Length: 444
Image 1 (cartoon, rainbow, N blue to C red):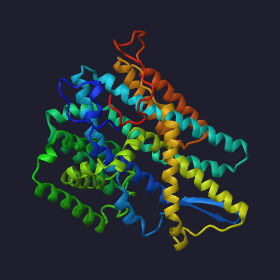
Image 2: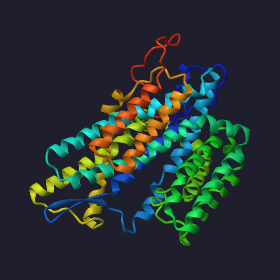
Image 3: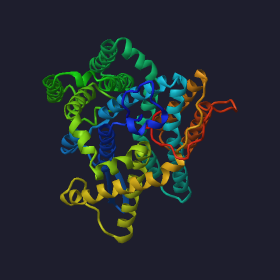
Image 4: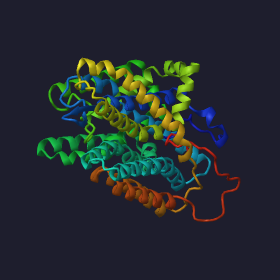
């Protein structure tokens, strides 16, 4: 996600980006990343049955996933923040005379460079497992679990590639643009319910997430903050009430995680409620974000957002594998999923997940950094986006294996090459950065 910046003025420069950051939005983004990691961590279940490890989703068929999902379903807010920061970054980019193509090319690099390393290393690790004689079903399960969260990479890359066009739509007809997207999302849900064809729901991979990004535009331009506090409170309460009633009457699953695959308009209600509350308490959030310890944690996560997202699942899979191996070697039993003993172990499990994910981000982010001069060819950048999305969809549809990982890495390499300026001449004053952010939170 793009850098959180204040609205640019013609005098803004690339050197004053730090001064234009919104610390409150940075903090909320960091909390969203932590929320995603915690949610996935609590869903990883590992047991040993008949002398063999069993890996499964610990939340399936449980009562506790409903309240947990209402607490930790932060993906809608993630996209709202992406719209907020992306719009402001794009406007600053235009003030500096940058083109839409250059803006999108920079986004391609900030998203696909971390993905190139993550998918490449995971593919190599799966290859090692195969060569070591690890059972094929174990390797397939590991690859499947790793690939599940990668939907975010494909969808987010597409949303960011469309941001310049969507920004102009917002400038020309803000209410019409978000209204049309929301209407299309609702229509997809209705058609899905009437026909019983769940495949139709995947159309909302576009409509729901783009609408949420568009909602972030309203936060960025001050429209939401300009509303009376009572109005924003009513919006938050109305969205929450509508969501509760829709779940109670069976329109949506009360498990908000289930509403993400495929996406439903329940996520729009979540995003509206979260955005309204954020706007209501934004000044307090900013004040809290400036406390020294909070600011240090936020400063650590912000430039490593994408790296943490891409690496938290390999960390979890490694932890699960080591736990099973230890149990098999020592002869100790593992607690049944959702049992009292299992819950007693969750705090240590969650803290370890966060610590190891942070360590992975610290070690790997520097190798994923660096954004060269972007391409000036619109066709080349469009091709780069399509290759990046296609490579990721391949991992999602076919599963992550040594072969599909190698194929995706090849497409990512081609995409990154397409998104680099072919001319040997560099812009005046250009210097290759040593360690730019590896996350899509960086500005163009």
